[in-house]
Length: 359
Image 1 (tube, rainbow, N blue to C red):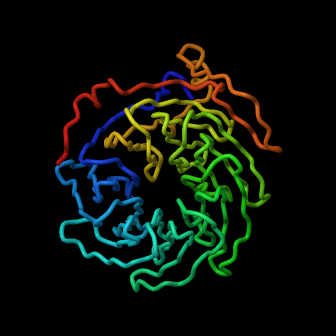
Image 2: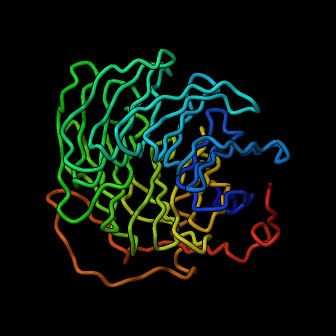
Image 3: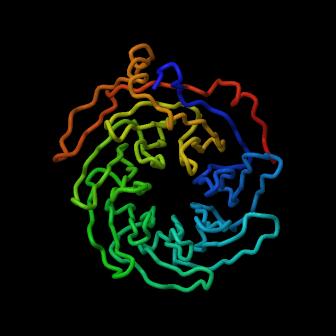
């Protein structure tokens, strides 16, 4: 690859419409829309090709914590503080199915890869499986002793991974309904998790400023990243499985090279906690949202990433360096904030200065 063609990620679009903190963002399967949920009780569907067609839904009567697109249709699921989940079409006057899923606030909702079921996680310590559109309760996955922050299907739909405030990561078999393995974190609570797109690996964002990757086949910790200075709120694998995007209370995002086990970019773009991040279907773009109520869309350029070009740039860029004590974690690869990464600060770029409220 010609190093001259290698380009760093850059900010392309900026959206504003929520009146309170954005809690989660997710690209639709086609990558031309982004849904965002917020503490302001609304869900906004942003049309990336025609910003005049963005739609704001007063989806719930209370704070909305999570959203998810169906991989097989145009349906969107959202979950809220009032214990409910809604399955709806993101269009004006779209049909809405609503039901009370738990006895306490619902923190997470995720569609099965086939689009026929959703899994939910709640403050009532339970994880539940539902069949859509019958709104039929199928089963509960039991084992957590505190709030469940995240529950997600594996890419093949055979397993559900969960994490939460009891500091555990649990893997459940959908057919047998049993917990097949679990991991305990002594230092921090699980804020969010994500599955590797094609390997049997789960990564967890933790309140102790860390990101951990677990190999479920060997049932061991394989990578530990200590690259943030505050709680890590969300994370996402690039569709090719070679990179990971993280967002933190320290107001930064990190792009991690999981093949080499190192951070390659530190992105500063918000004045507030980075609450959610996501890649589109092919990884050509990614988005982030913050407690500052702004949604930003970036060109990733990771599909053309040149490792040698990055190494040359990193010798000349301002590099992030922090001194931290060493730690041990068995055979895992430990990456600390002292690892090199190129810093990109987009808080004063043209795309951000020229923003307008979309509603």
